[in-house]
Amino acid sequence: MVNHQHVQVLVIGGGPAGSTAATLLAREGIDVMLVERDMFPRYHIGESLLPSVLEILELTGALEKVEAFGFQHKPGGHIEWGSQQWDLLFQDLPRQYGYSFQVIRSEFDKILLDHAASQGVKVLQGVAVQQILFDPDQTERPTGVTLSEAANSQQSWDITFDMLIDASGRAGLMANRYLRNRHYHEAFKNVALWGYWMDTARLPGDKAGAIATISIPEGWVWAIPLHDATMSVGVVMHKETFKAKRANQSLETIYRTGLEQSPTICTLLATGELVSDEIRVETDYSYAATQFAGPGYFIIGDAACFIDPLLSSGVHLAMFSGLLAAASIASAVRNEVSMAEATSFFEESYRSAYLRVLVFLTAFYNLYDGRDSIFWTARQLSYHNETSDTTLKSAFTRLMSGVEDLHDVQYASQTGRHLILEGMSKQVEDFLAERPTNNTGGQTMGKFGGVRTMAQSPEHAVQGMYIVKEPHLCIKRV
Ligand SMILES: Cc1cc2nc3c(=O)[nH]c(=O)nc-3n(C[C@H](O)[C@H](O)[C@H](O)COP(=O)(O)OP(=O)(O)OC[C@H]3O[C@@H](n4cnc5c(N)ncnc54)[C@H](O)[C@@H]3O)c2cc1C
Image 1 (cartoon, rainbow, N blue to C red):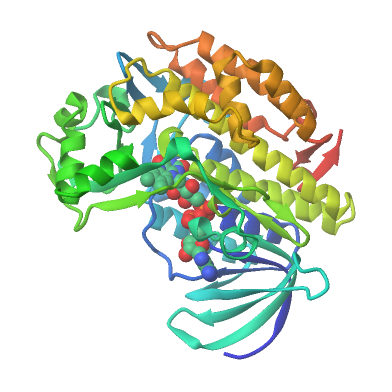
Image 2: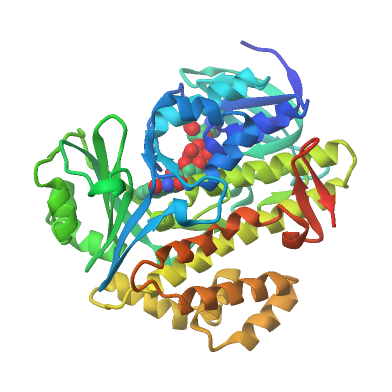
């Protein structure tokens, strides 16, 4: 296939971020093409969803299809963290949806991608972006891509566009290959190992569909029940611990030894059998690009940033950034705001949502009341080691220690992020003041759920702008 075509918006990647952005833009009457390297369904990790995802699915029109599919209903989470344990039930939160889903991502992502096509997105599957082409006069502005069929990379063709959305996930084409501005988080240099089990027990009673998140001396463990009767079970540990073990242990031994550190997981798995062909491994998965948007491009989902799966925030951030990008582009195309305003609104609001998760993640790790391995010590040390960094991450981690507010405010005012920092600082203090002793975890996560409101009302405006969903999707000045 060799032809040349121009589209208004080209989206790279058909995961939750790309599908969401493309669907919302097509529903606004914008000409969108989405290019996905794989043929769906394809395997992906990231199975436990937050309730906020349902609100975005409602907006894209895919909620009914997801509801009808029969995914495992997720009422919330069971958390064992150091000496504390509590249950978080979404129904106790002041949210529109008091539940969410545990999904098999190959199926979930296919529903979303098929839905995008049904809404008018030109979806090309099995087609990879080989290279991004840039404006010769404005070298940071992408203007086209060279595509080839994944099965036959010899034949290629070009597509040009007005605007690029990079939703290529961890591959992160723009940040990794062209801008080269992806940075990895020292404090979250973890390794995750996981597999799938059959015939396991479930958590008791109305927690049967909940995720179990359990600290162990070497890190933490997840158990996610899925609708095909399997359970996704993973272990997260420090990279150095993993490296030392890997010198003389198989992946399966490292994995099983990790699981054995949790009595609750042992009980769940006692009758179960590991059925996956391989133990899957992911390393160094916490990172962020220094820039999420620029002339002619928006980077969304994991292509821009990702932090630690502890809070199950990945798909939420992917879809939320898809919503932000779609609203920003739709408004700029209609001349409701300038492209510069739209770009800067997106950059600031996605980064704030991401940083908020980072703050809560750090707070959550800080709730752990033992320091019994390199995993937990590394988190403690990160507060001290990184105080001289001029990155936002260090400003936020220092903010967590609560003793260097002045530095934070100075740093924040230099970067124009004063108000965001102030607001978040307050929320984090509240968060820590409400350490979940018995069953107050719901309130804790309720605050985390504040990500949802970011940039979605005049009170939560970012750079004086917020998203409006009716009568059409756009960003509006306060
Ligand atoms: C161990 C682990 C556990 C996790 N658990 C959870 C969890 O429980 N809950 C949760 O919400 N999140 C979880 N996540 C995070 C979640 O997996 C991601 O945040 C989410 O999948 C991001 O979606 P995305 O659309 O940005 O990227 P992806 O879903 O990765 O989609 C990107 C797509 O781009 C395509 N692509 C890449 N390069 C090209 C190219 N050159 N041309 C065309 N297409 C291309 C890929 O094929 C892919 O389909 C976890 C992550 C890890 C590492």
